[in-house]
Amino acid sequence: MNRRVGLIGGIVLIALVTATGDMWLTQGLAQPAGAIPEIAGNTASSGQALPVPPTLPRIAEGEDYDRCLGMLNADPAGANAFADAWEATGGGDGATHCRALAEITLGEPEKGAELMDKLASASHGSAAARASVYGQAGQAWLMAGEPGRAFGSATLALSLTPDDPGLLIDRSIAAASLERYDDAVDDLTHALDLDPHRADALVFRGAAWRHLNQLELAQDDIDRAFAQDPENPDALLERGILRQRRGDRDGARQDWEHAIALSPNTATGDLAQQNLALLEAGPNRR
Figure (cartoon, rainbow, N blue to C red):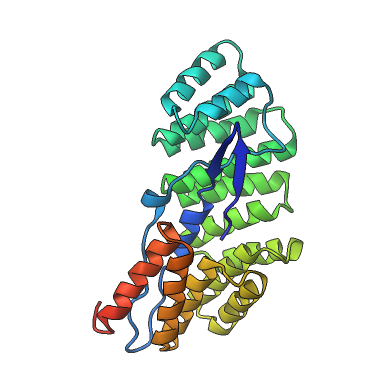
């Protein structure tokens, strides 16, 4: 899973991609006879976080921009008020961007996404900076439960920087949330062509292959992800699902217990715990 972390103003912000990706990683297919149901959990409510403002390229620079971003975690209402006042006195792109992030932090991802889409469209910043803002808008749309609009924002981002692996992965998540798994595979394949060492992309593509009932291809991608990152909790979550699909209950249990140990109190750990509960309930639990 893509756990992109950005250091902005001394604070760490975790991208939404993690939580949203887990949501569709564990949505089940039609199951073989006797199989337990796979988790179809929605983790967006428990795993929301701010889309990561870019380190480079950034849509704005300056002391006021850094100050506003630095307030987001501890005082989002203050950041929103600061951004409003700054915007009224000509704060430009930086003020709008900070206000959008403040809206998201205050529980209004739809407002934040709208602001960022408009900002990316109107800004005179570089193509890469505008693409980054469109990408953040896409993450916010996913937080708002609008995968169609997330896909649109990610597509606009990719029209500016078509060979950005992170944006391709983001759009694949939106596509999969729309059950467009073939499109997700295409974007993830493109991302892996650009950067073969993205274990997160391999895990996502493995999940997409599983949804397409291509279990051998799914297993191959998960094996490749483990070759790059043997302790990847998301790969363990997905391999456990594949093992469960083959009737290997003990193997599935081991993978999910390992995922929980590696990643407690996270969306991944929570989903592994839910899968374990269903496993213990037995095949008659529907």
